[in-house]
Image 1: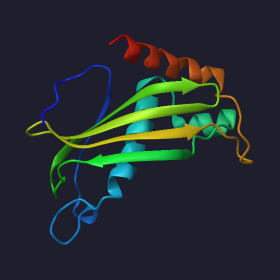
Image 2: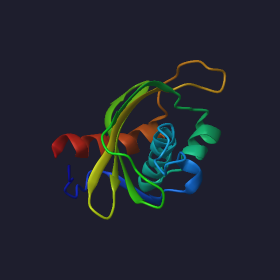
Image 3: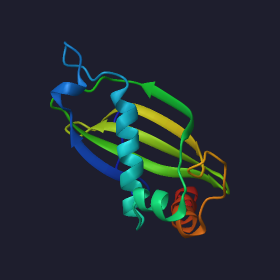
Length: 147
């Protein structure tokens, strides 16, 4: 399946490293979850803040509470891949991200995914999303719903 370019997504590029593959050169499944995290961190940067700063300055963390992944086609050693990430739902104490992992050379959709997160403080207590950061994420969610 090929994917058309879509400006709603935050995009991050990387090349599959040998250490991310099994003996046959296919990416080991758990590496996609790491790439989802890379996508989330870069999405934050694209929207004017650093995830690490949100943790330090606002005592706000986003642990994953639910995860779904659909593996379509395997990525292989040395493939250049595109990780697309977007905010699809933002509530006062939770956020949902969607992901696509695409092989750059031919536009093939390799993996789709979604993660749900709750907002917590460093003591593990649920808390409201800090407004400074929620406002930036809300702008993204609103743009995605319009398109």
